[in-house]
Amino acid sequence: MEHQARAEAMEKTNVAIVGMGTVGAGVARLLLDHGDRTARHAGRTLWLEKVVVQDLAKPRNVDLPKGVLTNDLNDVLNDPSIEVVAQLIGGLEPARSIMMKLLESGKDVVTANKALLAEFGPELFDRARELGRSIAFEASVAGGIPIITNISQCLSANQVQSLQAILNGTSNYIVSEMEESEAAFESVVLEAQRLGLAEADPTLDVNGSDAAQKLAILAHLAFGARVHWSEIPLQGIDQLQLVDLKYANQLGYRVKLIAVAKLIAGGLELHVSPTLVKMFTPMSEVRGANNAISVVGDAVGRVFFHGLGAGQMPTASAVVADMMDTAVGRTGLTFKTLELWSDQEARVQMADPATTRSRYYVRLQVLDQPGVLSQITGVLGENNISIASVIQHSPDGQSENNVVPLIVMTHEAHEGEADAAMKKIEQLETVKSSCIRMRVLD
Ligand code: HSE
Figure 1: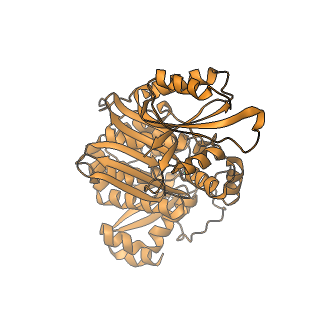
Figure 2: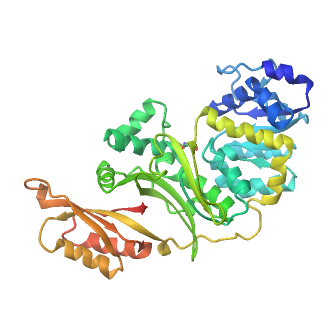
Figure 3: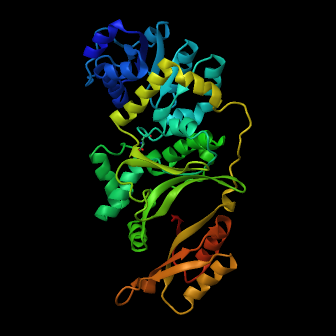
C-alpha cells in the first residue's frame, strides 16, 4: 500500500481485479506491496482502483486501501479510467458473461481461467478483436511458468516440432507420492486433500481433463491447431495401479501424466496419458506439484521449462506480468499479430490417433503354463509389434490360481495395431485380465 501511495506522482494505469480468491489476493499483494517493481519494469504504476467480490463481509488476508473493495461490477464497467482488469473467477459462468461485459465496456482483460478459454476461446477472442481489445492468459497454462509468452513470442522464429509436458500439478503430486510412499491412488488422494493439495473434487485434475484443456491451448499457440480439448485422446491417473509404478521403476522408468503435441506425417499427434518416462531425464525428475514443458523447435533444439503450475504467488506472478504487458501495450500488439482462434483455417489438423507410434509397456495377468508366452508373442507379431523385453515374475511357491503378471516392453509400434493386438490378447483363454498399456518416453 505504501508503494501505491508513494507512486501516486508517476504516470499510472488504473487496474481492477474481479474475483478475490487465492490468486486474486496474491495479485493484490504484488500490486500493493511491490508497486516499485511494476514502476521499474513498466515505467508506470499499476494503480489498483477496484476489487470486485461477491461477499464484502468475507475475511481476506490482504489489506486493501479504503474504497477499493466493492460488490458491484458496475463500479468497474462504468469507470472509464480503469483500463486493465484481471478477471479471476473460475468456471464457465458467470466468468464468460463477465469477461464479455468487461471487453464491451472497453477493458483489456487478463485471465487465469483455462477452462473458460478452452471452451469459449474462439468466441471471446473474436469479440475482443472486434472491439479492439486484448485478452492475456499467461497464467492459464502451467501457472508460474511463462510458457505462453515463450511459445508465442520468444520461440516464434521456430517451427515447433514437439511438445511434451506435465501440465497438472495435482496428478504429478499424486503419482510422485504413490511412487515414494508405495501407497495406493485412493489413499494418496485423501492425504492430498487433507493437506489442501487436491481439490475436494479432484476429478478434472486426475482424469486428465485439466491437462487436455491446457494442451489444447498450447497446441493452438505452437502449431495453429484448432482442436477442442474434448477431442484429445485422454487417460488420467485415476486408474493407475501401484504395481505398474513398481514395474516401471524396475525397468528404469517413472510414470508421469504426460501431455503430447507432436508433428507427424498425418498431422498433429495429441494425447494425454500416464506414460513411462526414462529415469534421470529432466521430465522424469519433475516431482510433487511441479509442472514442466519440453519444447523442441527446429532452430532452438530442445528447451525445458520447470516450475510451479499452480498456487497463489506463482499464478499471481503470471497475472501481474500480463497486467504490466497490457498496460504498456505489448499485449495489444501480440494479440493483434497472433490472430488467436480467429476464423483463419487451422494450420494443422489433428492426426488420426491410430496412426501415431510409440513404444509400449504392457501388463497382463496370465496363466503360468506352457505355450502362453508364445500365444501372446504370436498375436503381437501378427500385428507388427516387436518385443523389446519380457518380465514374468512368478512368485515363490504357488501363485494364486496359477495366474502371474507378465510385463512386455515393445519396440516402437503403431497405435492402431497395438490396440488391435490388445483386443485379441484379451480374448485368449490364458489371459485373465484386461491389458494395462502405457506409452513409453525414452
Ligand atoms: N488444478 C491444476 C493443477 C492447477 O493441479 O495443476 C490449475 O489449472
